[in-house]
Image 1: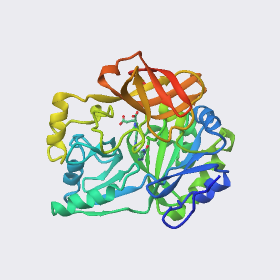
Image 2: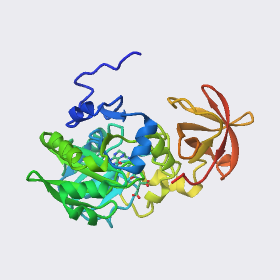
Image 3: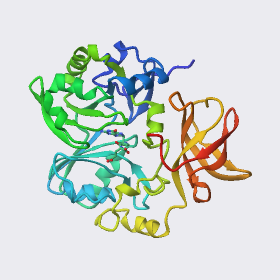
Image 4: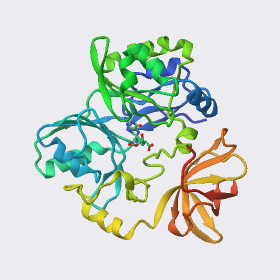
Length: 367
Ligand code: THG
């Protein structure tokens, strides 16, 4: 098999040494950085994630830091989610849209202080857009990518493992809230969040030098909990309906098409640069939307391009992510489906690279 060449442009992370020692078998590239995709096998990693606890190198979730008197104003320009209720110590999942209402990213916003924010980005070069808006509007802010690398601890035993390293205070952290907790004399943001539906935390490791000490501390503390290196799991995230920017949506899609309307308050998000465009979209309603799709029949190959969804001769949507689910005994998938066929239990056909497979559209994901 051809290999992907490593170089300085394809950045390693503070945890890469630990990832390699744990026997990583595959990577993808995300924000110009290595992101592990598989350790034992995707199916074995999936079962283990649902039963035990994993430590994930998600350093590729880079931070865009905004600080200064206009930080909150700039943040609200970026998203149709009303940020006024947000207080320091909170995280918000925020669609980021351009002037047409198209999705530029779907990050987690972290409000450190009134005048200091992190945007924990998905895979697009959001820094350029944020800097461009700040310059264009002459805002009083400093914007950069700090030396901050998230390390996720995910799975049903995450609370027990984290309590051993950071103390019982972790147990009281509420969903999408964070506390500052000490590790080796350094104060780190620890949030209850993460790219799985199994529960857990994300540690925003400030300073790459403590990356491996923290990785090793978690691995040693969790030996009897069956802790293992892991990574965002394709099967689990499709079951849970966690979207992947660049795969399941692009700048051609509005948040409403992505099913992210519940994270938009477009009428009250005064200042959002995509507000006028989105107000028009909200009035008419989307004509296509993200849906869970069950693809019947044998296990599908990896979905590395859009697979047409057909109703007879009519092209009614596209599958963007798919995998065999061991727990459900069927293929789980995410598709963008036109409104004529987006009702639950609509029967369709999916054109996979290996042939036509019958499929059923649903309205709610598997977990
Ligand atoms: N954590 C952090 N940064 C990230 C991700 C993350 N950056 C990249 C990527 N993931 C951004 N995308 C998502 C997608 C889904 C969620 C978070 C980031 C998520 N969604 C929950 C859900 O849909 O059930 C909860 C959303 C909510 O209720 O607010 O967690 O994972 N740091």
